[in-house]
Image (cartoon, rainbow over all chains, first blue to last red; front, side):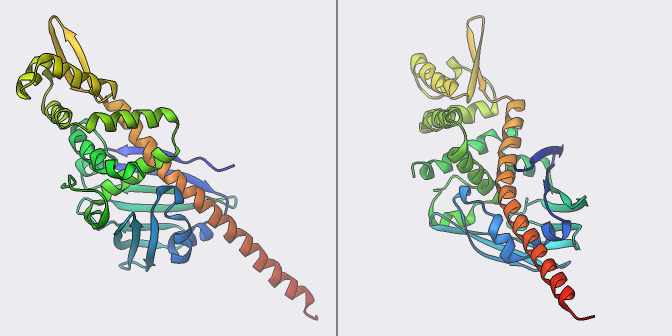
Amino acid sequence: MNNQTTVEHRSEREAAVKRTFNGPAHLVYQAWTKPELLKQWWVPKSLGMELLSCEVDARVGGSYRFEFRHGEGTMAFFGKYLEVIPNARLVWTNEESADGPVTTVTFEEKGGKTLLVMSELYPSKEAFDAAMGGAAAAMPESFEQLEALLPSLGK
Amino acid sequence: MNISGKYPGSELSRLPFSLLLHAANSCYILNHMVQYTQARFDASFAALSDATRRGVLEQLGCADASITDLAEKFHMTLTGMKKHVGVLEQAGLVTTEKVGRVRTCRLGVRRLEEEAAWIEKYRQLWDARFNELDKVVETLVIEELKRKEKTDGRKRRMPP
């Protein structure tokens, strides 16, 4: 039986996800920082995206880059590590868009299990709402997004 | 945010992360959620397939309007506009309220429902990832145990 994933809307520009993993912090941390392990879980098959490459230099100031294929197109997510405390805490930027969040992941070990908290803090409420397909004010944009999805849905 | 272009192909690389997340979430939901959601999506997409109805939504995004206002704006008969609004209402994109003789239309998704919707989509994305991460951690735990057993075994076999 899987542990529960919960989401907390911490502020108008921050959301956090929590989950407990059945293993010690140093192993969960490895799965977040070693490319060959990240590749195994970052893109669930159900998303219909394929991870083409994954480079990770988990040091303060080091960078990461994920490249994906989706349909016939490719795209990349990239950024830099701001904080790296092995087995405890990672902070990185998301630089593929000017409105990208700062992501913080903490690993807290208790009795051989690890509580993981991942939060995304956006530069503004607008950026948060746009990313989450959010608030009423962003509705026209959401419709454009829905519309953009249309051609891919018949597949 | 310019995302009104075509979706497939190389265009994708220029889409912002927010859209990708949204697209990924929506695909995920389409693949995995119950039929009710599928039906709602179908209704939404059917509603959005018409230029006038998209125009009406944009209009209502700026301000609420009566069916008469909308009919005038889009140079249509009242009956024609009522039909369009009906489709949007069925899809849950618009709500209408009759006060006296005027039926006012506004964007239909209430804030709270929307909040619940994005939280659930976001949660599902991470839940799917974390289910995969569970397997990776499980493998790592087993490998570490095996390594420890091997080292312990070697120690025991060593002569005093």
